[in-house]
Amino acid sequence: MLNKFHYDGTFRWPEDRRLAVTLTFDFQGGEDVRPGRDGRIDHEKYTQAEYGPNTAIWRILRILEEEDVAATFMTCGAIAERYPEAVEAIRAAGHEVAGHGYHHEVARELSREDESEVMRKTIAMIEDRAGARPMGWRSCTQSPNSIALLMDHGFLWNSNTFSHDLPFLWEESGRVLVELPRQPFGDGRTYFADHGNPADTLAVWQTMFDELHEEAQESPGYCPFQFHPYISGRPGRATTLRRIIRHMKQDGVWFATGSEAARWCLDELFRDATDRIAAAS
Image 1 (cartoon, rainbow, N blue to C red):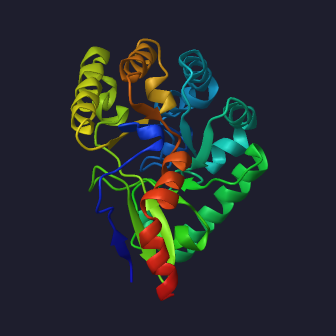
Image 2: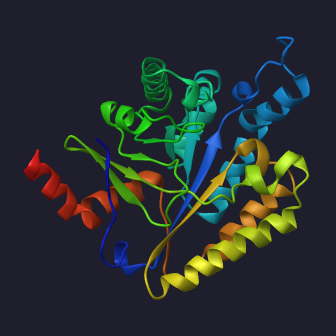
């Protein structure tokens, strides 16, 4: 039976910083484009998605380097297989490579066995290409089996829920997994159907950050972002990415990778919970 543990004190981050910001990029390509009823792939949609690993990833890596912030790339196994040079560049730049399915499978449509195999294949391919296995995961949707399977496969953290502002802990049979929640303001929503205005998107992102940053002055908080290279790496939109990063470079803000935030939560914030879990196991 799955249990959830929420931190019952005031959140705190390293060096007494008030707000942790996690920049995540769902790194996928044509894996997201499904055949139509006639069995054919829409070439226009496919090539738009392939812009991510071919072109956008390099623009995004340049922006992150120039702004001197670390990010987490939720990477499909097939992307690691087909574009090893991109995954190697992500790791070489000091960013985290996490998992995002193999072919961007819809997790809720998979059997337990198939979902487990997707995780196994993705771990193996990313480890081969990046030199280290992924410790974080975000699937396309989530199944009732996902959390337990992530524990089976040794993951540190998951990032699929929209249910809370602050990270929390999953537990089952003495095993634990950190959940880094999301906010529903990712670029896939603000640029819906390719018609979103970059200025409007920037306003949404800045307003979200500003409110969380203000609240964090009383009680430290967490500000996650979800981007896609093929969406936010386009000309014009990439400028919006740079602007939101610059806007968030304020006193008391910690730009953390997914694993940095999750490890801190597990080792510092949830230590009492994990000690109790270990004692009861």
